[in-house]
Image 1 (tube, rainbow, N blue to C red):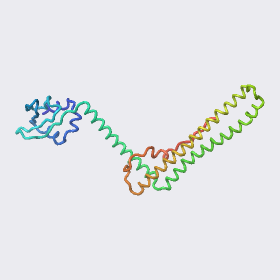
Image 2 (spheres, helix red, strand yellow):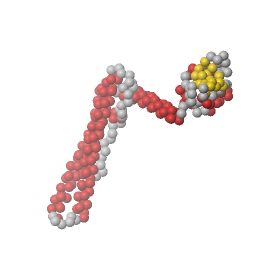
Image 3 (cartoon, rainbow, N blue to C red):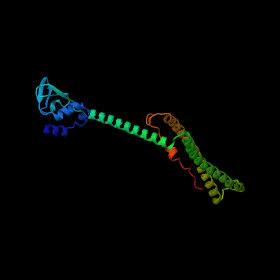
Image 4 (spheres, rainbow, N blue to C red):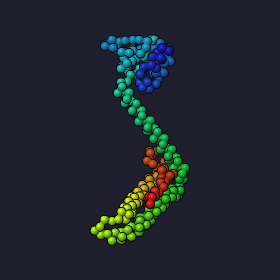
Length: 238
């Protein structure tokens, strides 16, 4: 029987063994005198070990009196093994996602026991973004103010090339203004994103507060990101 165990361990049957009926495998390993039987080319083959010619077939495992002890499942082909491994990976991923959903929901409940706490966090995150937008808009106003005398000066050079220094100043102002406008657009988009995330988070929390089990609603993408770590407003360099 020890030789049989070593043989099973050495063959590429890890996946097949995992899929075999547990009771049959336990009996195969624990009861001495196992006999294997299968039909090869119309004749019944009986051996005291797994039959190589029947690796792709189901083999009966017999007791010494001829009664059936169990069944040995066929070995998997490479394609079957790949399919089984892919399925196992999908199942493992689903279990991991479920654990993550439970963890996030529990964290949400601990962080936000009621809507007042959640509203406070939402306002803090949005206020930080509003501050950034205000600073960017003030910078845009300052750039516009700086641009006016530069453009006034260009009136002295109508039909003529602008002095290099003046042109450089105007180009620098244009570039900085464009960067600030892009920053404001990004900050406003972030406001929309954060608001949406808080709305989704609040909807989930309301269900949890009403008694829904953590993890029962699946994964919510970046659910706790805005609440636990609101994005800091960016500022463009002058």
